Image 1: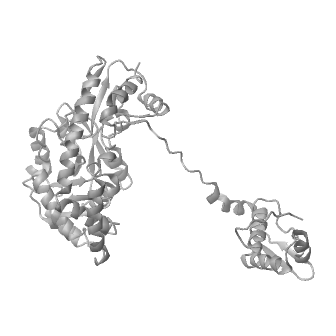
Image 2 (image 1 turned 90 degrees about the vertical axis):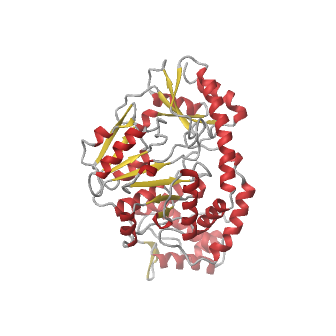
Image 3 (image 1 turned 180 degrees about the vertical axis):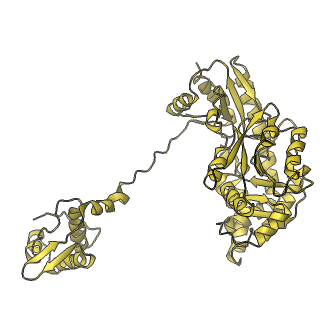
Length: 453
């Protein structure tokens, strides 16, 4: 006979039922074992007979027990190992969330400077539009696509037709869409490069070429030796090296795409809103007279990843293919689309980016100055975006050990080694400065230096 300690949060019959189920699942009541009679169990637990009857009826209904005439109730012939599987939901371990004192990751932004009250105003205005909208539009909300065309004209110098702009829920979905409209794509990606791009493409095809970088950036000479028809590049601020592709190299890459049908270049403009030492560098798309460049953009670093909106600008041929296809993509939330439209059209976005550009310029100048004071450190990469490379000349160990040491000390740092295939640049580390407070930059750099004795 078993004992149950009742509580007030559930009916008594449910507690009896749950206790017996748990005993069966954990093997304390075996298959084909006889249960106490309803009357004796009611007397033992000090509850009414009807309470036990309700519990047994539920156990009968679900098949945990069977009733044998003139004999009583027995656990059915059950497989114990299958029953144990029902406990998995309660046993799931939630990964421990690490709290960092200093976040030097490339995607960290200064969230404290987001104009929340302005964004709330835009969200309020977008709410009514979303409520009365007719649902999602293929390719995204038309009004936002028009606003994005204005944005690209004034901030990137690109003249594009809104109908060629497609809105997605993120860079991953943008790649999925492109994999649908491109004919038999064979990709070439940068090495080192953005690993998320590689992982997404690898989930669809194993035929991917890794193209090294030389002193001028993405090696088109190596690309020309492959059978690729799609090149994925970050020409304005190469990730993760921070290099800028020169105009001669851009011309050769565009010429490669022009020479054969169905050759395209995916230009990932992941942090094009921020430039410090000069005016923003025009995108590769601006030189694209043959309509072979697919321009991909996002607002994850200018506003934040919570926006959940990316976009691509398709060449006309691919735009027509898209319109004639059914592609089951999730798309962005209409509410967020209307929010972004309002934020862009009101001028608040431009004012926000201009303020952040000034702030990030100060952060960039200060952290570079502090790091240059140490002889062992060399800074690589152009003064744009939210990260650069730090080469530590005195370091000859395993860069992943530095990452682990940083984690133990509350410092988030990544090595370039994570993003390359050949393991040649073990002394290079990616330093993001967007998430480090300006007034605490000196303290943060001092702690960073201690990782490299």
